[in-house]
Length: 176
Image (cartoon, rainbow, N blue to C red):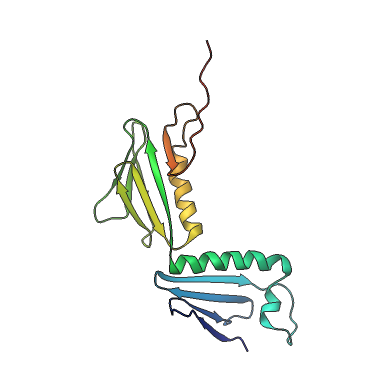
């Protein structure tokens, strides 16, 4: 019944294919203008043959989670996600290595860091700003957290790597 279900949007920008090649997984393929995405769900322990296949995989608790992940995947293959990071501090620099997916970070230490981006990630460096663009929200947030963890903003002076719209709350210094 659901073996090769294909759903297309009205503007033909997105197609969702449901394939059930393996009986223990439910697999969705999303194809959009920015690329492809695959989402796999493990089957829970029900094996009643006359039920709708979607009922085998979802409980009421899992349905909201599944719909949220599917929504993020759809947005990813149609529009994509981006996050902008800003450096604040004397001598802090972002530098992109030419013709590679390497980013050189100078963060106020004696040494510098080299961060290798995945091949499907796009990033742009403009002075103290770094713009990262991806179609997978989970991978994007992981990359941003890894870069940000190298130099978390200082609570007293505000130096470090921070999000573009992140509010800067400084602690007061020593009172004399």
